[in-house]
Structure formats: C-alpha cells, structure tokens
Length: 288
Image (tube, rainbow, N blue to C red; front, side, top):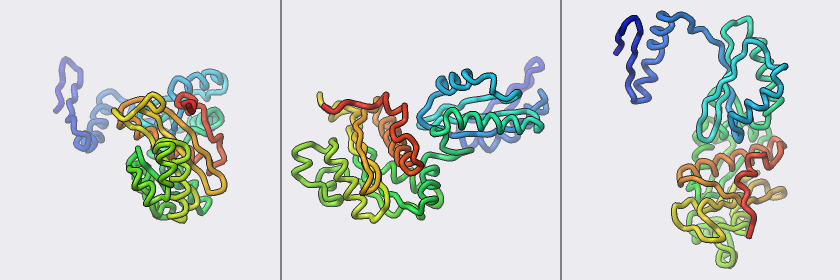
C-alpha cells in the first residue's frame, strides 16, 4: 500500500520476491511521476574473482581516462559481482561504451559476461566456440558443478554426463580410482582427484573435465586436512593440473565457491587466460 505523509510518498511492499517483482514496474512509475527522472541507460557486467575495492582502486588509478557522465555501481553476490555502468542521457552512450572498454582493459579476465550471465554460461560459450564438451567428477560439491552447467539453456550441446562419487566405493567403481590409491592417500588428495579426472574423461568421452574432492564440514577435518580443504583437478587428457585450496566458511559457502572456482579455471584454460588468477592466492594451501 502507499501513503502520503506530510508530502512524502511512502510505499510498502511485500517481502516475497516474486510478488515484489510483479509490482516493481508500477512502483517505479509512481516514484518517477512523483520525483521526476527515471530515465537511465545501464550496462551490466558480470565478474568473478575480484572485489569492489580492488576494482575501484584500479579505476581510480585511471581517473583521467574515465569518461565523463558515467557512474560505476556495484551489486555484490555469491559467487559473482555485478558492475553497473549508468548514464542518464542517450548522448552519453559512447562514453558508457568507453568506460566498458576501460574496464575490459583493467579487469578483462574477470569479466564473464553481460546482463544475467553466469559462470556456467561463459564456460558454455567457450566450449561451443571450440566444439568441445565438458564432464564433471564431484565429491564434496555433490553434483553442484554439473547442476550449474545444465541450468543454462543449450547445455546439452556441451555436457553429456557427470559423476557424483561421494564415497570411496563410488570413486573406484564409477571412475576406476585404484583402491590402493584411496587407501594410501585418502579421498582428499592429489592422486585421487587426478584419477577422478582421468576416469571421468575416459568414461564420458568428453574433451575436458573438472574434478573436486574436499572436506565441506562442519566435521571430518584433521590436522593435515582441516575443514575447507579441497583438491581440484582440471584439463584434458594431455594438459591437466591439480591444486590444493582451503576455502573458509560454512558448508554451503564452501560448495558454492568450490563449484564457481571449478567453472572458472576450466573457462580460463579454454580461453588461454592466466590459469591461476590472483584470487586463488588467498585459498592456496601448501601440501604437507
């Protein structure tokens, strides 16, 4: 409902997102009619692996090159950060394009797309451009990486199968991880995650893969493998690598970030970007 209180327009809205979304056009029209304005030309960029403060510092370092009349805004999220470039005059659209070009120059390898693009869509485009397919071998993420990939329309062109091998028995039976390797090194280890990668590639016939095995918590950690430890392996049969990370936070945050990192490092390999971006440094955990 709405109220007029001493000349101020007060609008109350429902908390249920779908109900609020349905009402937003009328709400915006009411506000614009009351206070004026309402015209804006916005370009939205989706990024991953870089924060607001870092972006703002980089932009500030090039303040002389920032086009006039362009406002830079942020909308934080997990795992992505949205940037908004806004101008209030159609005559400034070229300036907005110049601002976008400058951002590509400053943080281009972190920009994954426009509007509502997600990491999985960015990966899908890279796969389609190269006529390649991807598979997943997941333990601690429980199929989340495959779910994110298949959530995007058109995913059937790049994804045929994935493997959720939560137990050691499943890792052995579905991905041919040697029982001796599991017994000697444990499920959360470089030899196991590399074997998972190999097994997924062989069994799926895909061109490239991501494999993850870790300790999502809140229990199950140890001194040498604390909660949050995860091994990721990615790449092709000929060109692959593995890395050990420690991702802090609760179970849900751990799974979301591990899945996002997995999608991003495969994307980076396909696009021939730096394979280990700066954000990885905060998660790298030395191997005991």
